[in-house]
Length: 395
Image 1 (cartoon, rainbow, N blue to C red):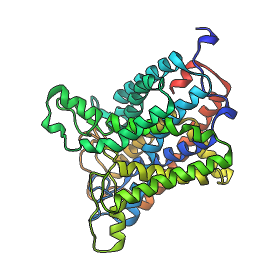
Image 2: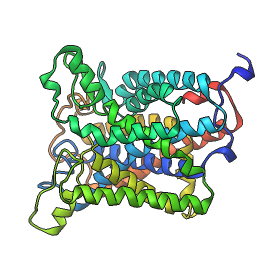
Image 3: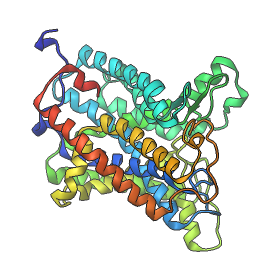
Image 4: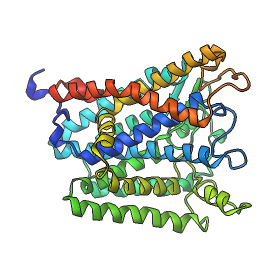
């Protein structure tokens, strides 16, 4: 393959949009926190941290804030596709790249990533990488449309998929059920050792939103801040309008609680599986608010965000094995059965009573894991800066 035929790779640091990298890095750091809690926290497999009858405010918000990760990750994938077009990768060249990379991500999700989460195989765990990969396959076609048309498709998918909530996979059979699970409703695929956590269509909608709103991230600083402020206010304002009267947009209406604090938690407890309209509005609104502050952080704080944000897929892949691997070693040392860490998603063996870390210790474990990740991600980021090999676009 000649140099002229090689796919363009984003290795030129000045051409990157730093704000996108900062926000993506923040999403990855929160994702590591969520998975650290999953594998280390004493109550992780005992009850849902969003269960208002069992949780504590700190545990609730530890889980809730990590809800930002997936929609930001998917949204910024759409932004990145638009940025590739802006840098000259267009037409069939972009279609080929999106198709190849999307299929590559789906393949990794079914093999390397599923095994990393589960430590047992065969088991197919379809979550955010599947959603991004399948969305890229669709975007190989959609990117030919005007950006405004893609944005309208995104709005329709995000706002409209709740209308189909009455259709249940258990009422379908065979290929229809499999298709509905893959496209709309989380759950197991009959006859396969699997769990579909991120069905395609709602997440494709979020990626299309990122593609449609991507030009905002390349505006001059003041215009960009104004546009992001308006978008954030619009998302959060619409969330309040829809959520407070339980008007529309979430599978789980909030209910009156015994005190105002619990009522606030219930209002914020929006549905992620699949991502409801209220969930998407709230999380993207908060993420856009955060972008207004990220560029003002001290450089010492920005550095790890940029490092992780510039090496997103490698960092994502590594963190799965580091978190699960460290948890397994820690568990064996402290008396948990090996079966608790093998088949962790599909069918884990219960840990002994009292095993696991309290929430403050989970936060400490999270920082340790970030410290293990950082030098590898930093070294790979520097490697990418100096080279333009085509395969860097797939890792």
